[in-house]
Image 1: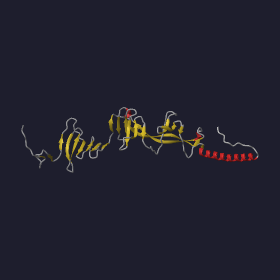
Image 2: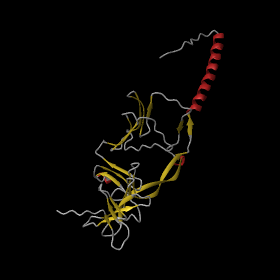
Image 3: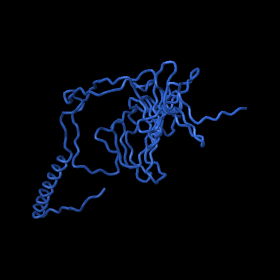
Image 4: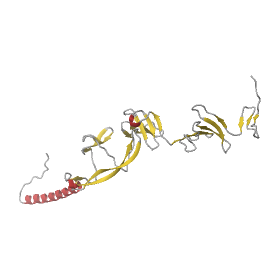
Length: 297
């Protein structure tokens, strides 16, 4: 085998050394280094940058579009046409990933057909798992205790206070089903059922009003409320948001104030006690014997 000793290479029409090889095996190239792809493989080029660094660029040999740039900083840009738009960017310096499209882990979770997760460019996150499996889990740093769990069957568990500026609504299929249950150390202390029945160990309230004329249609004010609802396509993606209306009923009929009623009854009872005491005194002055000993059943 013959050996050719070359230290520099020049183009016949050029000036200066286009390629320089030193004794340590380093190769210095004056401009770009390009390799031609074959089949479905892209063309690759090692290109210099304005700051003296270099990056690797891949070009689709069929379309001529730049599809990938790998910069020396560790940043990788991907697209079907990088001159038009970067669709995926991997940043090695901070570990971030930016994508203009959907990101899927596992199978396609749309309509619950496969186990998987999809982060969609529309802002939607779709998760599909087997029944009663944890779908979303939160932890507090330094603790192995789950602070929030959302299961695939819709069950949610919170380890702390749940606050909202809206309404908490429960729509059950039977009046006997619970809408709310309160426990203390595992013992039920309160509940509210879908039919309106409720039970509390004790209650404390400024007042309580009883609606006296609920069966009268004129006791209700009916208005229309607008709300928004997402319309999903065959793959489970939200395609558009539509505005709908629903009927809202407000009771405006006669009410009874329990506090006012009790205070009025107490006042009447106190007044009657005073009258009875006067009657007893008057009758005793006439020699009538009256036993006022408290009667207990």
